[in-house]
Length: 152
Image (cartoon, rainbow, N blue to C red; front, top):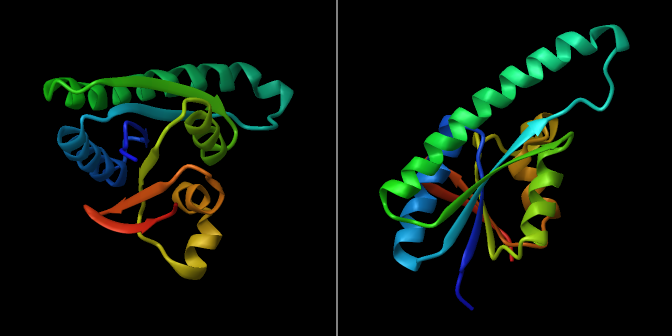
């Protein structure tokens, strides 16, 4: 079984930039297509009197995400690699990425991590930790260009 479709969970951080570099290198070697996925986090509850302020902040945040994902896409395009850029709205980034990967028949999810381990990672509730724990699609976690963990 070859890896033909990758979902790159990207948030513009240095850690996801490491995952981006790894994914580009891997796609160059394998010819895999990549979907770059960012999640626009939406709060589950917010005060009614603050809706106007929230809508303004959300628009600015979406504009920033669009700029970040376009920059990531340009990295793939510069190497003549096939990519698709997707911004998903949702309250739980890990759940949104898992659902997207399953619905789009991904062979692999790649993400970055800050490298917190053990008890500290449970307190932080990192997206990488949740992807590895709950995804049925294999997950590759990149930390400083090193493999941290993989699931099958």
